[in-house]
Image (cartoon, rainbow, N blue to C red; front, side, top):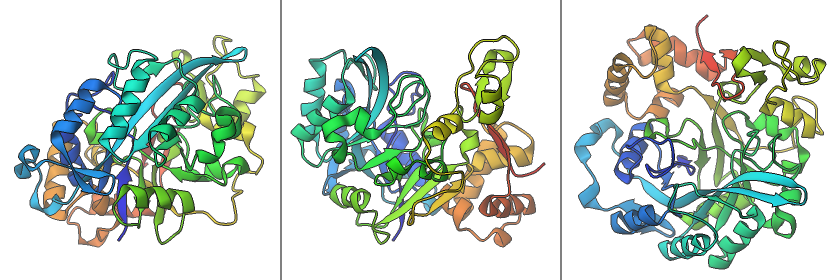
Length: 409
C-alpha cells in the first residue's frame, strides 16, 4: 500500500500562520487531502509541546493519533474519512557565523517520542528564546543541532529544509554552502534525506551528483492546513517511524515511493528577478546582465534554477542511474479557480471543492487516480488529463512572488 506523508508543517505558534494550524485542523485536512502521515510541526515550542502531550496518544512505533475526544467526524465527509498518524516534527532556523560569513540554514527535525522532543526543547532553551516562535531562530550551527538530536535519540532525523531557497537554506545562494559536507562536516553521513523545496523538483536536484546518495523528499512547509500535501512524499513501508526512517535510508522501491511535487516554476524563487521592478529572468538572461536588474541596476535575487546550475556537474536532463519516481501536481482549488475564472481562495471554489470531495473522495485521489471520464464536469476532466500528461503553461515565480501554472491557455 502506498501512502502520502507531509512531514514539514507549522502550528499556529509559528509566525505568519493560520489559526487553523491546530492538531484538529491538521487532522481534518489530512483526511480531506488523503494524507496518512503528517508532521506535528514546532515540537520545540514549549506551549505546543504541552498540547502534543495532552492531545496525542501512541498509535504505532514512533507515531501518534489524535485522542478520540478531539476528533470531530462530522468535519470530514464520509468519502474522505481515514486514519491519520502524526510524527513529531519541528523546524529550526540557524543564523550563525562560521568563519567570516553569516550563515542562515533551516533544518527539519523528526523524533520518535515525546521524551526526546522534550529533551531537545530543553537543550535549545539554553541557547535562545524558543517560546517566541514555533520555528525558533537560534545562533546554532546545524552540525551541532544534528549532534544534539542524535544524542537525544539515535534514530532522530535532521533533514535540511528547502535546500535551495536563496535566503535560508543549506545550498542557498545568499547564505548557504556548496555541499552537505561543508555544512555538516564530520556528521554529514548522518544525513539521510534532503528536502527539495517548492522552487525545485527532483530532475533539477539530479544534476548535482553530490546529492545522489541522499533521498529527495518533498513537503508542503505549510502555514495554513489547506496547503497540506501541495508537496508530499510517498511511502510503501509499514506505517511506523522506524520503517519510514529505514525507507529514507535505503530508498528500497518496495518501501519508498518517491515524491509529489508542484511544478517548480510555481515556487516563489524559481527564476532570478527583482520584484520591485517587475523583472523576471531565466539564468542565461540574468548572467548576460551580470546579475543586475536592467531597470534599476541593483543586484537581482538569484533564483533556485540559477543556483542549481552553479553547483551542477551534469547537464539539464542528466540523472543518476537509478532514481525514485516523482509526480507533478496542481492543487485542486487552483484547477477549479482557473476553470471558474476566479481566485482559488473564493467561496465559489471552496463550495465546488467540498462538493467534489464529498462525491469522489480525498483530493490526492481525485488528482492522481480518479477516472477523468467519470466526471460530469468535462472542463475539470480535461484539466486532470492535461495535468497528468504534464501539458501545462508555466509562468515562473521570482523574488518572493509565486509563479502560476495553468492548464488552459
